[in-house]
Length: 232
Length: 226
Image (cartoon, rainbow over all chains, first blue to last red; front, side):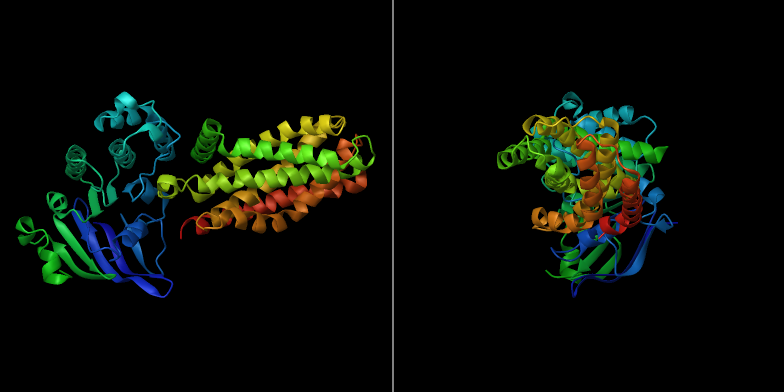
């Protein structure tokens, strides 16, 4: 079954078509890297998948349901450009908040588990505004993974992470893939992405230029796809 | 049950954040006190005139102070893109809206309860002679004001001039509720019971609350998802 089916998506900002007739599907358990230069439409497409934007035309089915269906949203974990946590709450309060909103049976246990997995358990009671940038990013990762989502939508997940945090995120993504979750990530950090992605999609100015299994050439030369199909 | 828990979770989060920073609560209470003090210089506290304008004065103060609280309601979600995290979570848009409205309702009620005794001292008025009826009118009107303010706070959250746009949009919408509240509050602060002929104003307030709550709950999903 398709985890995500994108069917003829058009999205305009004013008169400008940010996405033009995007059509592809991602099977359950796949890891797709969504590639493209700045302004190609990656973030817009991820936001539509996450139910944060409505397309003008077309439809996105997630696990065979509408992307705004509450059951669909309960199965999605999202990391966007912002970290999505509150500065004036503590790390634990933030995770408890989202644990309750996602209807977890034991939000406190889940929150403590993810604080431990992201090495934030020793600052669980500290306010997020006192955190370093890296700690805030790790908390954002904990928030997105808290409810064991079956689909992860990650927009530039490696940005502003140090090498240790990148390794942590990669291992969490790997664990998610091993338990059958689907991962879709947009990124400019091709080397990090190619370690996990088995499928790639390339957007150029709102058009889907390539979609399929990761070409073998990309392992040696991550920019191969850009040079072959897109803008060099 | 889950729905009510989600509403309370959002309201609790907003109240906890606000009581920790006191960003809008301090501003709204200070604003209300300053207006009450300044206006007290303009009228003779012993005059009958104060009995006639008390409802109007109080509700203008509450409405303007309320705008300071309502402006921050969705704006506080913009930092760190928290609104995206909330909207992408499985909570229904209506539960998110009601949670935020409930949080604003509590904060605005605090402003009103702080302002009333100060009004009583500055204007030499025994405002609590019809206390329970006054509290009923206060809560009914505050809910109406809060519902409209929270909805328009969501609508204007991404505008650069939202601090200006919000009051411009909400005050005309609030006119029926404020008219009723001013009329009834004036009577109650003067210590008079509400005459049978004026009960229509209470019905208007209740109808206003029901209609605008239903409209907001029905439309908020469209507002939240761009």
